Length: 639
Image 1 (cartoon, one colour):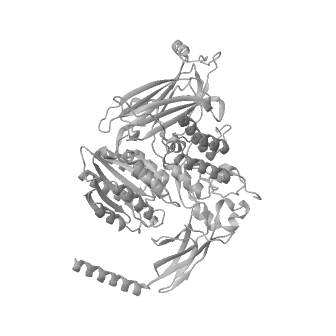
Image 2 (cartoon, helix red, strand yellow):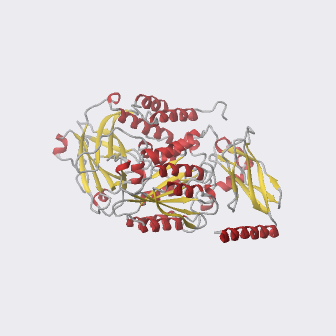
Image 3 (cartoon, one colour):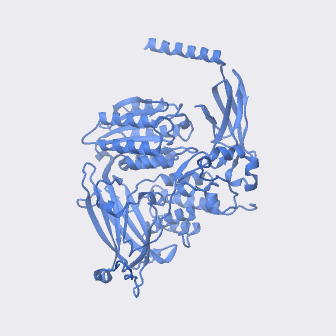
């Protein structure tokens, strides 16, 4: 031990001497302010471009980047919804180079000033321009809402990129479909709730989220609903309800709820968990690695003796920090977490491979085997493309090891990548923006986080065209399946954890009883409705397919749904609250299908349907909608 310690000291002295010969190191420090108000900006990441050196501004807007080798560098400041032109700085050995930076909210840069004020910022932010995908322009605060919500980015391609290089997959909103021409609607369930935490982060930070960050199904599924516990042979229950649609009272809203079996933590099978933690330089921010450590402490505090945890980290390379260790030795696990430090690039592919190897070496035949990946998603070394990462995850999931993804931070959040790998890893994706959210995911939903009770869960709705003219599914755009995939057991779909619930909403237009459109004169075929459908009072039939976690053949469960002419005001609290959340998402996205929806209606409906709300999540939603309403109000004096 002493020899190793002295060897480390000598190595440090040699490195220090080498730096001295090469020119030594210096410090870059300064203050970041708002260019218009000259007020300090906290939480800005100041980055020395092309290196691992960075720092975060404090409450007074100051920062200091120490230990930077002497030389000339480009420095960039990163913060969601703000921009600045990169600046050059010279670092001198043993000295501090002062560099004050000024940033501007991208929604406040007038179109006519863009090229004159921040030409370099525009150039550096536009990743699509170099690909021939169109110029990324900024817009004024009084521009149309769709542009303001996207922070000025025209969306010609499939990925939205913010000034801090966050990325979101494009959402092509589900349109109304004819129940006669397309009577089946098929999709994979989605228990992810990351979009809600991310939307909350934007709004509480004083900005509206980009439209493609708003996934309506994830907003709805963030909340608990009072669905009954399953009875009988299936591990989940089904709840259905039909009532008036609040944003278009001539339409109906269909609510479908799926509740997974609730299992007490002490009754969970033993866990073989691998913490896969991103410790790259991009994680060196207060709302990333420090919050990540606090979050994992919560989970460690609730481990049992029969549970085992290993820790794998990745930055420039991947490494095993802690071999698989019993939950009995919490101090050892916590100490390993405390020692983590950020620095280097991001070898995500190598980290994932090592984590799967460790999980397989300690595989529990009668337990839960899971990797929990915590990252901002910024994989930039080695295997980094979404396609390569997805193929790796698809191959590794065959081992029986499941993957949960926890997103952290802002500025370079790779939401699209993290959602993909969680979907393909038979797990789910959550975004942790504060310690309360960490408690929700790690403690309140521990069973759902760790234990999968059903995999490849698919939902298919068959509409009765004699009763339904057209319909649309709210959300789940990236979970749609072909109708024939429903019975194909080789097709991957979503997983359901213990205690998880899944909710889906359909907006439907009832058929005219006198002319239901059930017969159409066509040249080559006849499209007709069966006589039995005309006599039936059923609107639709909901069918589910799922597999037990260790089986390869699916099981089927179906239930018919009737319209009981329920007024929206008389619907259940769960029905009304989920409708308010869906309405919230449509208003944020400025959906062309939002009908009469307003944020004021969202607030009123959600407030009246809060119910018992033991954790205060629904009350928080009301506050969030109130903040969003203020942000959406046109600014007085805007040009």
